[in-house]
Length: 460
Image (cartoon, rainbow, N blue to C red; front, side):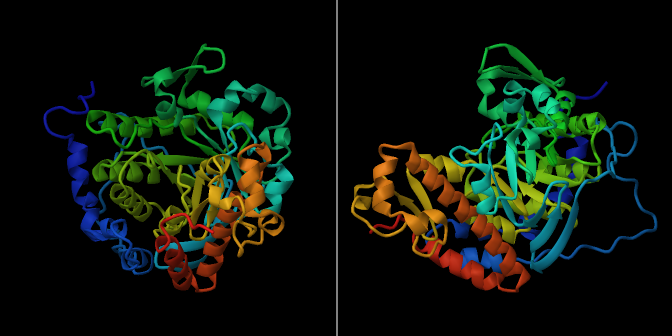
């Protein structure tokens, strides 16, 4: 019989890992993150991006080695150490600056370059854009959602037509989320147990049980290049026993996901590091996932209302703990400044609805920040959204024209979605080339000077 997660003081395993979680001093410094987001000084973010060096890894002593963490068939917390070696990707680092790296990620359907941003196409479509337009602007991977695709059009239909690639006529990369995020976004419709998550369908109101096995089976039928393990997600603002419970459940569920995965040679299963804002729990989760030798790893449970100080510390800790030869994916992150800083910390992949969602509200992304096209000052502005942007929208349309559209016509949000995604994908390309060509410090300084020194939306 397993002891409760919180009997008396913290569990013995947490105590064992406490020494390894003293990252506040060793990995990120004690106050660099706080300084970065207080005031408008450029020195802190520049120092954070350019002067942050990886901590040297100690040499491994092969004599008298201790057995691996959680050895045996079942640990005290109830999960086993499963190792999988089947991978359907190749990850090649092409250039570095400190912890930032530019790489080539070869997937079954596409060869990608990182850092990369993935637009979110929840049900196999990016709102307002065609696949040919996405190819034109350099989109490499589209993200789909397992929960929503299982409801409509159903994974069975996708399997019949040869997978989501064929269904949506998209021949580049696809990634499917496991459905775990819906534990947070649809919490009022969900009931979470060790067996899985029972959702009330927003379509017809019927209950739907999503277990780790079912999530993987659905994703196997969908056929994405990268599939995500089902994890127990809690808001980062939650504290107490629920966070530890969710972290250990995530580790138990990864073994069930690995066992259920029937296509390891053409689909890559990524594990997700959970643990809320607790560095000790994050450390335990990262080590447990690395023990399983997965094709790639994600950092989950962020961008849920936590302060920036806590956010950066978790990203720094997790990227330092994950393997150098595997892709690292920070889930749900889409602000340009976040992507630049997380890339400097060694992350490779990002996704977010932000560029297209903010476009539907009439806002464009530009090097100085954002431009609100609904503002009355835009009504007579005959300049392009961004004079330095070579995208189709900036070449052909003025701010005044788009101002008329965003207040009356759906065409406005489509044009802004095109521009915003072009901006994000171009930012990814610039990060990659600056690292490969040895220009990363100059790129970061120029980016931060424009972004941080122009906090307000620029006017005419």
